[in-house]
Image (cartoon, rainbow, N blue to C red):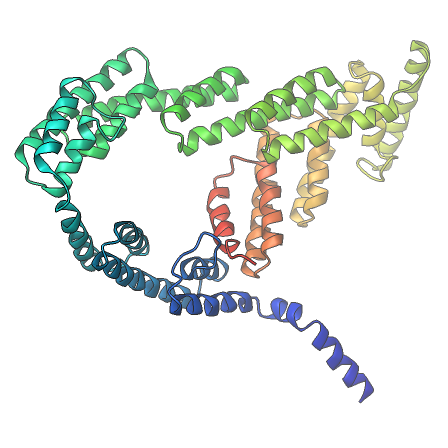
Amino acid sequence: MAGAGALFLILLLVRQPLADRLWPETRAQVLREEAAIALAEGRLTAEDGSGARELYEAALAMDPDRNEAREGLARVALAALAQAEAANDAGDVDATTAALALARALSAPRAEVERVAAASHARQAGLAGREELHARAEAAYARGDLYGSANAALPLYQRILGFWPDDADALRGREDALGDLLQQARDALRRGHYAQAARAVAVARSHDAGHVDLPDTQARLGEERDALLARADRDRDAGQLERAEATYRDLLEADPDAVDAGEGLALVAAAHGRRAERAAADFRFADADAALAEAARIAPDSAAVLAAMRQVDGARQAHARLRPEGSRDQRREQVATLLAQFEAAERRGDLLTPPGESAYDRLRAARALAPDDPEVRAASERLLPAAVACFDRELRANRLARTRACLDARVALAETESALATARRRLAQRWLAVGAERLGAGEIGGARAAYDAARELDPGLPELSEFAERLRVAGSVAR
């Protein structure tokens, strides 16, 4: 009985963590219950994550195979529609607009959304002065002020058509203004001003996606964008990092949300970081610091850049420990001793372990003394296959921290960049798989740590963005 009582006490003390381990869906169920309460209280959305929408979305991110959260989001959409109708009846334009936006985002019945939107539109149209808007739009067009402010021609024509869609004068005025704007875009492309052309095309598309001149102008713009992106990628792969950066920045100026250009810029920063790692592996710290400065200028908070900083710092500390005193002849003698110890460890099969006595550690000490010595470089080339085999072996066994140590050895041994890129991607994908398992179990902290490890290794991994969104949604609930 005493043993049973003790077991009961232990289970009582650890019941919540144990429940989370045995039933990972418990956390998602709690979120669904909190979401139902928020919905009943009319708290449909909230920036701090306490709204019904955010709670249901977090539950869905943790447990995507159950339908309860999806059904809850559908109820939130209907509640948003009801709030929009009530706000419109009360004459609250801002509240009506916000509630309609939430209803649309959650796929409320389209016919009902349009009915409430039409009622809101009719209320606002009664407050606008039609003739005054026409006069202001025509004056703006006459002075060449096509877009850029609420008093420019296109926004004014758009406002008129929003209230009176069949206004012939406004339709004609918008058509003329868009024709002029697209001609300006084509002229900018001929002059090589991609960002200017892209802005003009985006404005034209937002006002009339069916304008007769738009398809040809968009096609020219797309061809130029593809050419610029391909050129930037080629420059990056060829090590022309400064040119690649300049082109990516041009693309981002035209479209700050361009994911491919943003990723390209992050990869340029990571490439500077890898340059720093390779220089530090040869104890060329001036070159390493210069490369790190470039990486930090481009992406100071990048996980890959921060990792490169740690690698360079570790190499500097190791160099300080290894660097000897004495004459040149004494250093040559020490290098010869270290190479003999390297060969002995190599014959024993102690390639990367034990720490301090392995062939890798002896070689690293020799590189600190004489990085350009031909025998030292030949030894590095012999050890590289062992580091590659170590990486593959530890990755198969899912020992990811040890896999990373083998990867660091491959970097220090100056493996080719293409081979290192492939290795980083393989390890990053494995970390992301671990993150998915942790998120499925409701362990958000563990999932985020795995995501950070993957992003540090390979910031260009395509799967990162989708998993980051799942993490954001799951972690948006305030605690």
